[in-house]
Image (cartoon, rainbow, N blue to C red):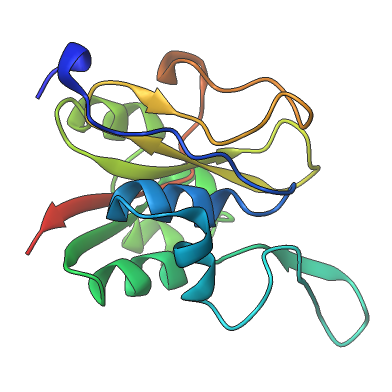
Length: 162
């Protein structure tokens, strides 16, 4: 497959926190509604800790990978060094930096998490068909990511068919 022959159809997110559903739909070649139906909560749900502090919005990368596994994909979830707080455990778990991961992505479909440009302290999912980016963000929410060179990849879910 090359850029000119991509069969990926861009699917837009429906609100500020539903980029995961859009990229899952692209990966499964399905609809946004189908991808959203695979989860027991709405994409805009917020998760707060016991003190009421926001800890997450949207869908966790582990949940994305597990959903893809149940739908005939073999996902490989890789967290980059940049995504984790500095600690001995994270240094032992993570062996790739964002720039090193980019070098491995040529020709390899993946769902990528990058820092959100429109939500503070949040990540945004984009779909990579192995050659080009499909960013589900709408113009109302912000400017789409058009190239990986200026982005820090926080994690990647490499997609392999079963």
